Length: 292
Image 1 (cartoon, one colour):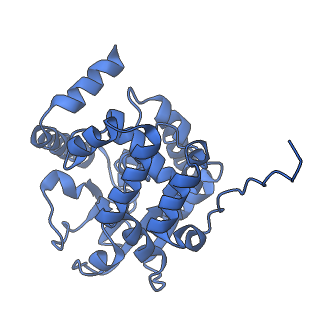
Image 2: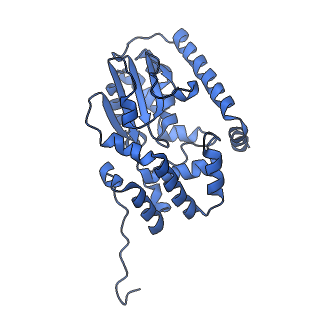
Image 3: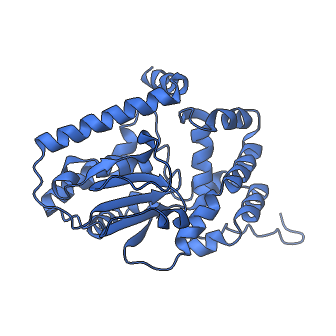
């Protein structure tokens, strides 16, 4: 019952209302942080930038970096550009952690940034991203931007045709090019790349510590353990009435990709999988002549 109610509200509330409500919630949250949470350690960086493509745990990162413990040991308040109708290349406010910036490396480079700063980019096996995007668009994602039209298009197709259509949609929107732009950019010590699978899987503890250290945020061991427990991916997924953390299992794409889908994906992405270091699709051996 709760799931259906939340889903109905998400699908039927105008986007402008939902964004205004989230902006109000974030501002109230930040007021509470300022009033109730003493800052014990400040990061040396004027701003931190979280860059991503969609379906890479951006809501999880937003929740994590909005936690009072992160504020206590950084002194930076969370800022979600979309809630404020942010337009590239406007600089986000100073002394903020700018979260869920969906843009290419080139566009990020053109944003004025106060020194010193840090940024991180989270990427994921794009085949899992496609599958996650398919089910989210079809069932749970709020009706923002082109989602309503895309939902109608996917609903009118079988799953296989819908996945192929979605691959083409992401290709036309530049999703795969944006991902490629980050992993092929020249190395910059101010920017760190993280794999979704590492941040949400068995290596989460070490990767979360590496992420925070990259951002100049040093959290004492006991508080860091609390933060890890609070934002374990399994716990976050289980707490969602409708899950943006639907499955999150690395390699789930293998349950959905067949030869035709894989061919469409490879045509759209070229050598992206190899470039990212993910395993290629397992080859099914052909039957031997006379075999069964």
